[in-house]
Length: 92
Image (tube, rainbow, N blue to C red):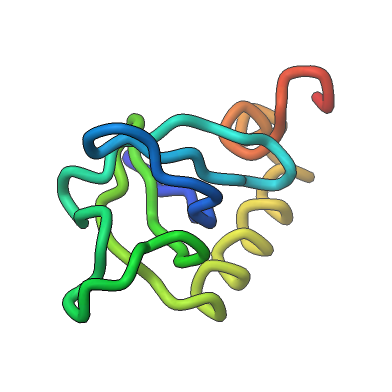
């Protein structure tokens, strides 16, 4: 099964790298597939992306991101392995 995790872009680094936040954990991701700027030339900082294996696969709206995170948190209650995707190591 492939699963994408929503994260909010905190900062954009060199090239196509970015730092996102997922449930309080900061992670490095690659923005090559979505770009560092939107179609209007605005930075993607603050936008939400769906991340899979370190790549931002698509830009999503905040409501969709929050609903997906809520579903994943609920899944964590019955399947703790999901915690690897959601939480920093010291939270699990």
